[in-house]
Image 1 (tube, one colour):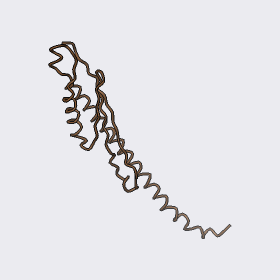
Image 2 (image 1 turned 90 degrees about the vertical axis):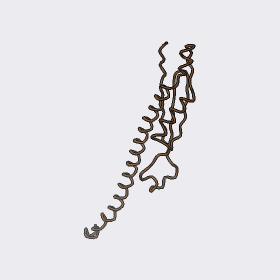
Image 3 (image 1 turned 135 degrees about the horizontal axis):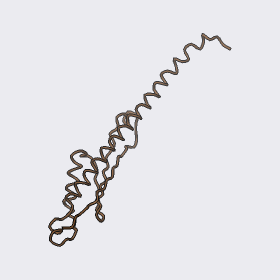
Image 4 (image 1 turned 180 degrees about the vertical axis):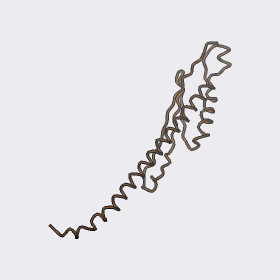
Length: 139
């Protein structure tokens, strides 16, 4: 066994390494929280866009004249883009209508807090999906 006084500075070497590890883990935690918060926001935007599209989707003249359910695709597109562009102007939007279901998908790059400093080579993309079911009462 060596002299205990010779081990005096060994803990001092480990402290900066431990602090660096904690800072990097904290950075990952902050970025993950930012991604989750951003995805929740995108889901809310997608839900609002789907609901707006459902509210303007039916061609009212055709419904009242013939009772047939016809969609006004231009109105759907305008309503979805209006809802998305207000809160997520750099997002990519897709939508579809199948039967009485309107589906909206929104994607956008994640805005990371510490990711650029940690050299994230591939950007993260956040995607949200929402649907609205059209319920039409008989005239």
